[in-house]
Length: 410
Image 1 (cartoon, one colour):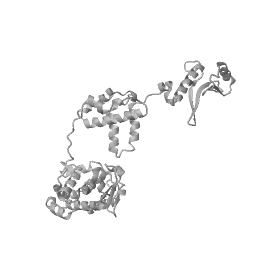
Image 2 (cartoon, one colour):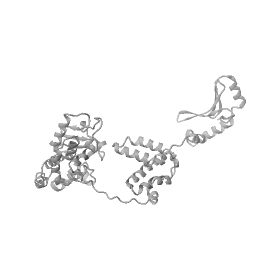
Image 3 (cartoon, one colour):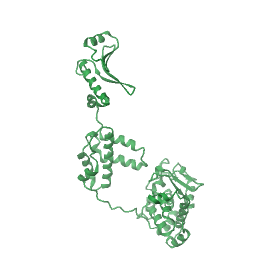
Image 4 (cartoon, helix red, strand yellow):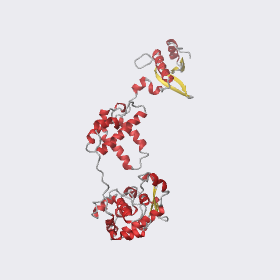
């Protein structure tokens, strides 16, 4: 395609004419002249049937203007980028120099905005945001393409000995942000927050934490505790009682909604997004559990079964713990009642293992998972009724054999 059609003489004549006109220099380079006597350079091309335009600056000979020769040089640079399939808007050197590089903090916020849509609960979302805003504060102002191993280590080292679990999660989240930036071509090379073969040599292997189970009340002590609990008034007490009778997690109970309860079928269906395993879970409700719910339903205030001081929010996650303290049972945890239930299932009943595990909404792997079809709701209903009956006996330990006889074969 012919080039260099323009001359300075032609351009000056057009500027003096006082009429708007478009002058082509050839092969995509144009000068748009305004009636005011000013003009600007534009490069025009078509890709995938779409017409694109890029401004190359105002015509002139001053420091902020572009001469005919300069415009031709810029046009040639654009042609080179287009010739290799690139994007002139991102790759033209003068544009790269003028674009303010994104910081680590900006990329972290963008990634969080994407991830927050898939987080199952507010706690997980808040943990991500807090670690990247507070612990990684010194990284946030650094251009994301310049974050180095030294920068990452400077953030992690103070936490590494005293808060290794937090430091490990923070390292993974920093790695996620830097991977996100690389995907957007905002940085290149290896990820300075990667662990294997990199930071493991700098920070050293994590010490294995001694992890204990949530302190669980022995199941033989549960019936006597339940006698005291049933005499205790308040929403927290009823939430704790329902939590024990259903063997549910505390968060599942605290965030329970009336729309999840089917009184006719005596079933509570917890949606997948609130379950740890990410799968919907149906909980058969025993007669006592159903009675608790019916009583609360008569004086309901909001969509939540256990509303907080602001009805639009559920009751505090400390509500059940405070009941445990009032009843002088704070040596144990609310979550520990799930272990109490599981121990009771194994020691005091003949219900099959998979029924007990299903009642706890545990994920079962391998051959057992393939063999067990469905949720065994009918069997689990018998199990939960037996558990409620056991919890209702003031001397649970003396009734183990009777329970075992009644539940023979599940």
